[in-house]
Image (cartoon, rainbow over the protein chains, first blue to last red):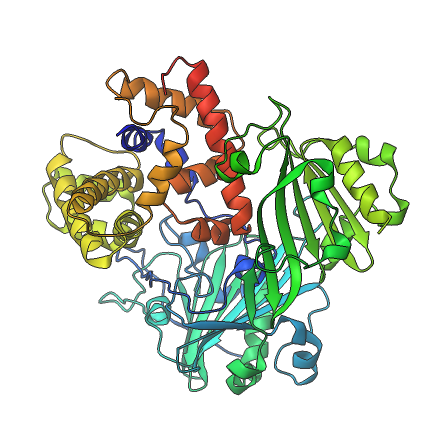
Length: 399
Length: 186
């Protein structure tokens, strides 16, 4: 069969493209599941990470913490990593879980209850908790993020992952091997003993880095991006050292449940914020609605113009060539500070000249992005024909 | 352990090479096999066969990038087992949908592919991939090389599933046009 031949031909593409697709990239601002994942039973296979044994220079011994211990000391041997030692994220590793809840809206409350530190330098905050089928907690992932409008100078992703159930990937992160001289075998790993607890630090200044430990309260991992400083990570370590997490605070019945739907199932959703696409010759293609505790909070919908329903259903259309155009309409009712900053203005203030002067995002989609505020929502429109986009935007102004 | 050291162990016929390979790339190979085959048992069988194939092929080969070398072997072995399972009406995984998507590129899927020069086809696909933005290329490779599910791709890149589906559809259209212009009869 020809499609099988095509699949087999793809096997021999340039290996740099194959490697590129699996390269670690900076974490996105919003973890994908908080926007679109179905919060019902979610099956993920466990992928473990463990340290390889290798030859090691002498001198990497377990260090003993004291009051004068500096953040850099936690990562004392970071520069000795051989390129194959990389930090394993307990937030990102795939652990089998049956259900999930969000506590991202509870930031102020969690700060006031001293469950999490106050971090005014990081505007974005998310909490995801994962559970077994009996509702018992597997892990809670708390993350704080910061971005710049331009450039990456202030980029920050700080994450604390914690739990109290036995998780094999945790053992992999804190297990170390000593040679017969008592030196840590794995290059680039620094181990500190503090209050008789072993703290394992991996990763260096310009890489993703982790600090992992386990005590009577549970296991914890502090993770920082390539741009995060040792100081900021140790500040989090010290905070959670003094303020162990009360895991009961993250019981399943206290969290927000996210589920997904579509306009086919919920056709009247956000009708006040959507144009009458059919009046402008557009046919519905696909959509996704994110519901928080059953209430719609965001929407993405795709439409195609100058194509029949059958053509769209079978994906038998070509953008631009025979007059087909696409529009991708997104509504976010709980926008973050960066999404608001990215807006070009309020709906009522937009002008035709302003919209028509915008340039396409890239040359694959040939779409232009228009982002604006309507009431307190952020509307993002991606359109292959910007003048059609203006007509659609203008039509909701009159609603 | 770095790739160079592991590859040298194969050349030295040191049987610890397989343990080292499994330790470093076992999960990677298993994920590819599982995507294609849809079940753990078949996937583990293919990964074991991958280690044997690697042992038998190094030497004479000396791969620069061991991950992609192993990935290609496990991908091919898994796809062969997928075809066998399909004949026996077994298995699941992503392959049915992935092949269905690839058939959209073809104007006459029922005609034979004898006229295709696979090497030229691969070169054309490489040229196509070199001309698209890296983020789109990664999505394409994740779907059609690694056979990742749309859901996993959406999670990996922080996108919605509908956005991934639409991006893949447009990339297939673009590749279709590119191959036609390159002289392939689809």
